[in-house]
Image 1 (cartoon, one colour):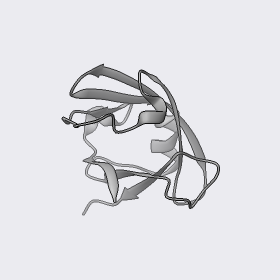
Image 2 (tube, one colour):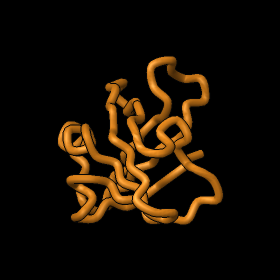
Image 3 (cartoon, rainbow, N blue to C red):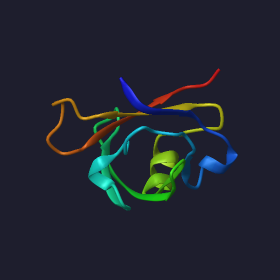
Image 4 (cartoon, rainbow, N blue to C red):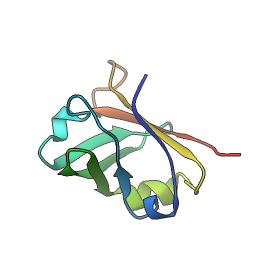
Length: 101
């Protein structure tokens, strides 16, 4: 199950903005700002910069732009980030692109 899912809009192409109220930090390994490693469906590893802007706003940047280009993410696609449930020793999280219609 995804920790976070979002339909990509025009502002999310350069950095992914997460505006959702969480009861607890959704990405504890990067809490307080830092880096998080994710693995995509092709097995590529990405390091995103993670910044907590406020209680309800977080931003992913860094390799995000390269991930968007490499995976041909477009406005209207959905991005889902899930915990590593033992499927990889290389990444903390899994990222999936769900194509829009």
